Length: 605
Image (cartoon, rainbow, N blue to C red; front, side, top):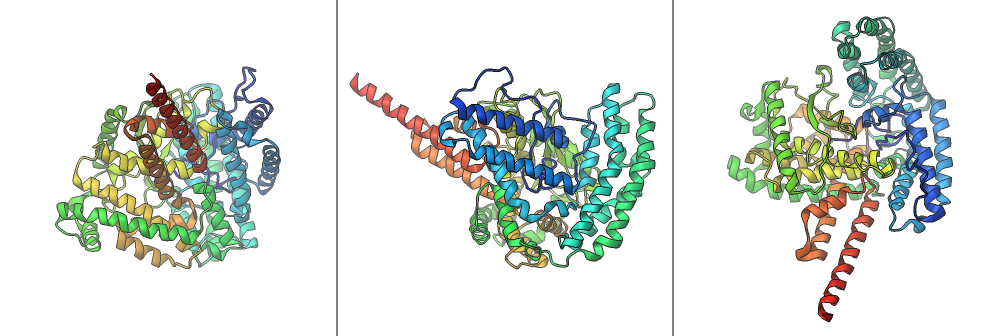
């Protein structure tokens, strides 16, 4: 699930898009881009946007492997900072609207234009949600991301160590500002559900009971052996960060939880229904009615379960899926009981994918990907499997942050599908290829749109079956259950947000249609409550990619090449789904014209 990837812009910018920037201007050699004044103006505007973004929100650069992102500070998080950034977005959008998009047709700048428009329009549309007043999330909050920053922060030189310590000294002020934002949210009526707030409270208690040398907030200390560095980290954590965490925790317990909302519905907040539609648009890059999403989910669930039944009969001698799911939840033989078992199966699946991928893709990533277990305190509610980008030069590998928790034991069948989703041919393949597009605007190299990115990763799970990557029928059945999970999200996510579903209704629906245990499903449902809209992007994106593949197969006939199709889908980077559709259809139009011309030439000869 690259939905976290790793800090979403929902934390700071009020959207569900993941954004990362390149500080070096695109096309800095001085060569004028083709396409006249509109293309030149667009490149200049995109350069300005990215340079501002990476300097203003440096964590995006760190998480996405941008080489020159600032390393000595955290993202600004005050309400005044949010207002200043929005004013800049309004300026950029006005400038963009004065550029003639039709003048860029058929040029690389056409993709840049579509990407920048989607980012700016979606961010403005989601302002109605006031996400800046709701910065509390048990799966993607500061308590999850700061320990990850500690793992990724470059070290090894005096300058880098000084930058890391400066960033760590900024944490107390950041947390105190978060308290102020949450307090303003209480005043304005924008609060998270009580269950989500209590989950964060429990995570903080887990962190605070650890000794300094074992705290995830001290992760910097073990990554550089320079004399005095470890002691400096521990001193900052002990004297500054831990007191700030205690203040934050006390505020949650005494002020926030008592004021947290009882309803889990986004519609319980001001302009909640309008907010949900905006969040769905930001995630999927499409404007879709919530009721239509729910109907699509039911249709997909029916189709997936029809595919599951014959496989269930072969493996477990039954077609009664709800009964089978109940059986699997209590069957210890299909569960992992040791962390090393989880890691072994995961690493073997990734190795098979690496060996097979050249037969299905013409372009391959140069950077590696590793299996990276989450920290123990995250496992209960803060570590859905997720992907963290490597660097374009391959010096830092991509990471599949895998939840290896086995208390309770972890269900085996979904693991291989998750491996292919997060690594190859899923997120790592797509993201690393996007990064490696040297000469292309960084806007199209580092941006992440969930509709395309998660849609591609879900498509990759299905493709892995065609590639023969699943080791047993049990894991193939687990992959179908993963598809069913994404269909269930189309039903449950809008149900919870705006269609009147209770948390218990959502849990019951997923228990009836999935093999996951109750704890995992409860965590899933709480994720949708905390971050509405994002979960709809997976199936919406997969279906669009499959529709385009079928169109290509139909129009190209015997000339269809799956490797060429995959390369075409991935060659523009991570893009909004409408931009992808236009790109593939333009390719097919050109291929059809070329085929017709060749046929005519052959006839004349």
